[in-house]
Image 1 (cartoon, helix red, strand yellow):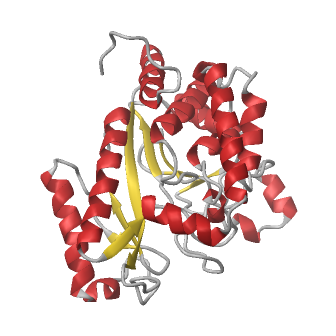
Image 2: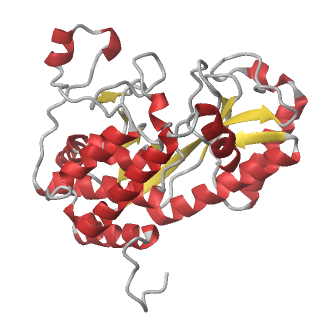
Length: 337
């Protein structure tokens, strides 16, 4: 990146570059990996590809057409020097996933963009439409596409890891305005298995909460409240800003890890976890939460001018989306994204 000119205040790549510089000055570096979930549908109009809804289901790939498509995607990524760690079918008809290996943040986002374009282009070649849009099919189907992010801090102590996580959780409703930035992003919230739940909280190896703590390494999480409508340069900037604020201010992790599905707990059981804040239920709710943070110091390093610009834009976007039918929105956005 050329540093001969001052960065444009809205430029997302420059924002992440500056955020990483601030973090490195504090002694922190990060690795990022993305899970590329996507939904496949036949261009001839069939609703979805998969005839079974089976996580890691081998039956999905008995159709040689799907196997050839996925294999070509994997070969393309590997030949481009991208680590595709594995692939599998996902929960939900037509759902698949190809995770990629860890990279430094800017390189990780650049790689993500390439991977998405490669998967969509190769799918089209084989007669399929691949979409990363969070709501790929019309209601009442519950199929949802996420963008789970593997996020780790190099050589983190337990104290730094806890404070960093606490900084993110304290700001999570506002951060959702960046990581779940579309009108239809909030389709993914829910209390059933495989969703991100409805609460601000974390869990040890728990895939039914907003943030999953991964065992075996200090300072390593899967942040699940994100989708591919997000500008990941903005997302990582916001998460790192909130996390480093938590470290500087030694914010404690007051939330406990649940031992069972939170949606099935009684109010007293949820209260015992110190879970007291709900995730936003809509883009407007998330933007409102972000607006509250504009004058606080937790996200101040992102810049007030940038935050206000982003809030104004998202308010307009939410208003325009609400004026369209679900079918109109999905017809356009599942094709583009």
